[in-house]
Image (tube, rainbow over all chains, first blue to last red; front, side, top):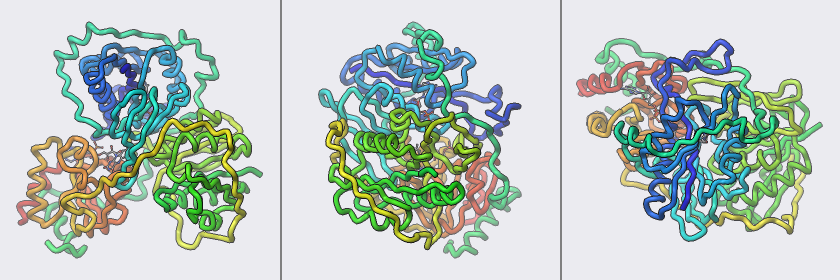
Amino acid sequence: MNIIVCIKRVPLTQEVDLEIDELRKGVKKDALAYVINDWDNYAIEEAVLLQEKFGGTVTAITIGDEDDEEILRRALAMGADKSIRIEAGERELDGFTISKILAKTIRDLDYDLIMTGVQADDDNAAMVGIMLAEELGLSHAAVVTGMEPEGNAATIRVELEGGMDEISKIKLPSLLTIQTGINDPRYVSIMGIRKARKKELVVINVEDLGLSEDDLAQRTMIEEVFLPPETEGAEMIEGDPSSVAGQIIQIMKEKGVSI
Amino acid sequence: MGEIFVVVEHRKGEIREITFEMLFKARELCRTSSHNLTALLLGGKDQGFVNNLAKWADRVIAFEDNRLEVFNADLYKEILNRLILEHTPFLTFIGHTSWGMDLAPALSIKTGFPLATDCVDIQTEDGRPIVTRQIYSGKLFSKVSFKESPGYLVTVRPGAFLPPDGVEKNPGEIMMQELPSDLTEPEKEFIEFVDTGAGEIDITQAELLVSIGRGVGEEENIATIKELADLMGATLSCSRPVVDKNWLPKYHQVGTSGKSVKPKVYLALGISGAFQHVAGITGAGTVIAINKDRKAPIFRVADYGISDDLFKVADALKAEF
Ligand SMILES: Cc1cc2nc3c(=O)[nH]c(=O)nc-3n(C[C@H](O)[C@H](O)[C@H](O)COP(=O)(O)OP(=O)(O)OC[C@H]3O[C@@H](n4cnc5c(N)ncnc54)[C@H](O)[C@@H]3O)c2cc1C
Ligand SMILES: Nc1ncnc2c1ncn2[C@@H]1O[C@H](COP(=O)(O)O)[C@@H](O)[C@H]1O
């Protein structure tokens, strides 16, 4: 079973005061630490588990700059066999153009399954995976929490809202967007990443893919980013922990909790 | 004058809330831009949805066929693609739900109409939509415009537009349609629904919930918070990452893919406040959030906030008992 996994490197933004850049179209990135998108980490693990069971190859792909190779090497250390980075230079990309670039890169590769994350932790769009599926004319499912291949089909579990899953059967080749919690991603050591340097990492320039300017034209444009309105929000309780604790208990009692 | 389409989402014989939220928001847009509102129903035979939908829309286009009783992205995208190309609606609304995430991006490619997902506001400016969405899990907002196109697609965040009671109006027209005879055989086949919610404890009945998020840091730390919950007579609940890491069983999870809870007080420890989590606590009486990050989105929905290390506050709370 040959599997392709699309992955993205995203900034860690919890516990960080995000600053908006001069153009007001993004955040200042220099001070941010980057990691593999959480959803994509589960997708790689799932691909590697399937490969360990059924054989075949796992290829990790990212569209990004040289720094983003870090997550490709991480994927290789987890067990992926090959990796591809597509350099997009200064081009502004949206979900549509990303899916076009991925589709063009993947189209002639040999695969039975493509996996992406449900969503990227930066744009929270949940768009690229299913667009890519449609570009390639593949069957698809979103928010997948289980997958069991059987011949040229697979039984899959899709997570719905409200504590309900849907079990269905899907024809292969297909594209699945992987939800967190589907497996328990393995630990990756620095040693492992260093060793993975021996594995294949191919760099392709987006300009060499033969995409038209129309394919590379964004369909949605960020006009402006802004901090959430400060109007609503919690009443902040200040003070040292013990006075805070006292106030919390006071509030609980006022709200009729029996403690 | 154009049209706004709303794709009806239903499950197990019920129209889902997101449908009415979309109809409500679409109606507001129709009023200011003089578009017509059309609800698109792809459903099973005689599920009794059309009359209810007609109260909300100027017309209902309905396909009733047992192949459509359960959502199927393959059938939905093919039928909707034909309808959209035939009617060229200015805007098409789809829920930002699991099913919507499987449908909307594919439909965007098929129709060639641009898509913006998970919108929390939708307006029109100079004849084009302009939407507001959240990025970085709600830490920032962004305004997004579209490349010019005959029509546009949006997916709508559940809970973003809550219709007040009594917004239904005079019934619109109902147009029953036959499924095209040349539909492609779907590549995905539904087998069954499985309930994943049940477990040893029922967090939906608790009057006090102590809820932990990824901020708890390590599995070992959960015992500390469990002790606190026991001392307070509270029930322990959590956000999704805690379940993903197998630190607590699924039935503790609060949120869209977990449970909706309604305690008198919800104490959130180290939870950032992503919408999928917050959607589960709209029924809570009072929300108190403790988070190191003063800018965490949870503080926008909490009643009281403490910007501090959760363990410091937890220890101080323990000392009160
Ligand atoms: C389809 C779908 C369904 C989903 N369903 C759900 C769902 O049902 N429920 C759910 O919860 N999520 C759900 N999610 C995930 C959701 O998007 C978020 O990823 C998740 O809620 C984040 O959990 P968190 O707040 O615990 O972690 P994070 O977002 O990582 O936040 C951790 C927080 O802890 C704070 N913190 C860290 N250390 C400390 C400390 N020592 N003291 C105090 N604060 C600290 C940080 O500042 C941060 O704000 C879903 C996602 C998708 C795509
Ligand atoms: N630049 C990228 N390179 C490779 N894969 C990507 C890229 N951006 C998004 N993806 C994939 O698409 C998924 C969904 O991203 P998004 O639609 O941006 O929320 C991610 O989890 C990745 O698997």
